[in-house]
Image (tube, rainbow, N blue to C red; front, side, top):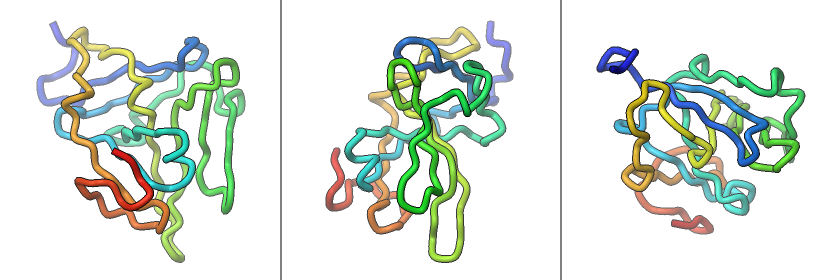
Length: 153
């Protein structure tokens, strides 16, 4: 029996390849989507980004602090790309999208790091989750159904 109300966002557990980094978060895969971006780092790392229903619903379990993770930043250093310091799996990103003079906060996990639902229900089939595309190369956050130039399916 599920511990969550039927309309609650399912809580998922996730981890890196070796299990050193673990987390939980609320992700609505039935109603949501995975985002692919055409910026250089997202494209080269093959990111499949999945945002929690709210940033507070994400909780890093192990290690106990982000300071114990590998953290890569570049250019304006607005975004942290967190990875396991042992197996190098990219686990999540957080920071701010720089949109002109605005900085828009965001956080997303790599969808492929989800392991299971905590309510005991079978995990969602990621093949059935809609993929949306953004033009991060040109700082455009409009979600489209097809990749932008320089992106990939």
